[in-house]
Length: 404
Image (cartoon, rainbow, N blue to C red; front, side, top):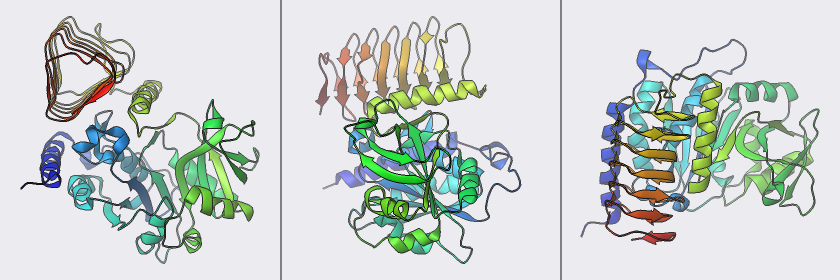
């Protein structure tokens, strides 16, 4: 009997082969920015909290682990690894609790192209957000005594890591965290800090009364001494470690200027895409598409084909090898690698998984998610359907539901 794990690995192997062909770095390192003397440290390391099964992003995570799900036409985790490489990080440790070989096999080609070492630290039981640091202790510290980065793999932002290094050097404390401003702080744990120095005073979990509007952004720069505070057991860095450091006046927060989003669930993924594309626009990025058929910010892979009479945008990403037939309308959506959208289909606020097909005159909206290799028939309507991989849908999905 063939297990789902075996099938899943086979699917991932296919993704690896395709990505290695499609994704390259001209001049060996496309992502390397010009380094400026003085701002970065030598041989820095980083740990990315990869986490578990990615249930909030199913059915996409039934095909690949969550960090390998495409975001703006590249795996989520690659955005972070590129940003880390740009500030001098030479080794990235992935804290993961299942299928580490899948992650490593996928990333080994990028390891060569980016000239950065990528290793895994595997948990045998869930260790929270601090326990993985204790588990990876030997991988994170050496004789240099340099601080190391810790990132939550669900976070997408401008990654001002250069500025964070400078901030960390300047305050002389033990740990730096990045915070971001939100409109509804009562939904989060709020970081209360001194505005002038950035010193963190306390954390308030989901406050009933206004105490501030800054929350933890999931990006940290820590001195090796922080590891002495963490035991190898399930521990929360936000609730158990950081409050203790703050009580000793050794924790500082840097306010993130620019966009930030936790894209671990579909609605936030779509919002994150909008913010990311807007960031590219502000940077006058040549990656964004242009033309009479484009509205707003749109990212189209150079290998994608777009037919006549289409109207695309705003806030759309079209991946490699996609075919968008004539008369198609796309807005606020992601079309992943190898998808075919047939004539006069309309898609908004949705995610279309790899190698899927959307039929003629079909209408897809309201946070519909099609897993890999899903085929939606002609004139079918999907109102928030979540469709598992390898399905053929011949009748409409009239209300949000999971199709198994």
